[in-house]
Image 1 (cartoon, rainbow, N blue to C red):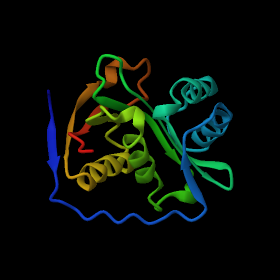
Image 2 (image 1 turned 180 degrees about the vertical axis):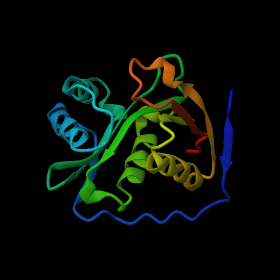
Image 3 (image 1 turned 30 degrees about the horizontal axis):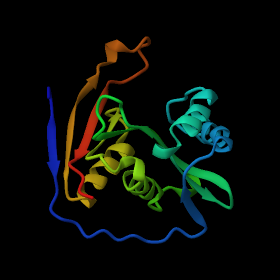
Image 4 (image 1 turned 90 degrees about the horizontal axis):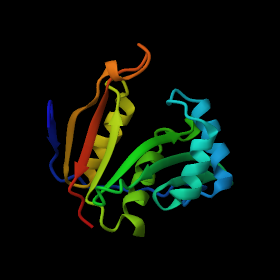
Length: 179
């Protein structure tokens, strides 16, 4: 991989605290608009509301929502690429500002990779911009907590985007994951 960086940390002890009043579950199509609203109230890349409805309807087995009192406070949209059944690709992860720093994003990823739909998955991949330190930290921590590698490589250069406002995207490939 061009420009790849390997990160492997020594075995870390993983402390999992229960989230008070927060449930982690499979999304329903009714959750799509709340996911869209969460994104629109954040600095995440905005997609159409239709994208979230589609993810909840057709990819619910590889998407996860966190809810507090039936309100969506976090989510992961992901899918398994048809030509790479050993990979789950995280398209987007979002956590409401009221839940940040509580480990919600990590719990969402844990739930995702432990789903029946991901039984053959050995790698988690995502693309992250260089300035998105929060996501970089999340994925590096996920690799460390799973005692595996995080390889970072170039994915989409800035010049591929239609405007000058989008940074390059780096691929974070985490694995192999042990089940």
